[in-house]
Amino acid sequence: MERLIYRGYCIEAVPYQLDGSTGWRIRVFISRGTESAASTRSFFACNAFTSKTEAMGHCFRFGREIVEGKYPGCSLDDL
Image 1 (cartoon, rainbow, N blue to C red):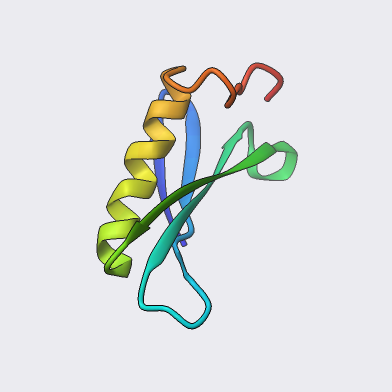
Image 2: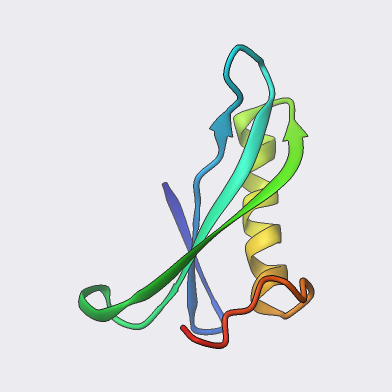
């Protein structure tokens, strides 16, 4: 897992390979707080990418956009 701190949130990128496929999907964990008392939420996207590297870059973009409030169904208000 790779991490990025953005606007006080920790975004962890966890791309994963689709079963029986060469495609990759994105999953991010977004947390706020200290490591011993952090609240975390996970988010998925349905987009498929051709490589782990490409998916990793999209994980961070997706996570930053969630933090910025660009996805109404992906609230971080209770973190």
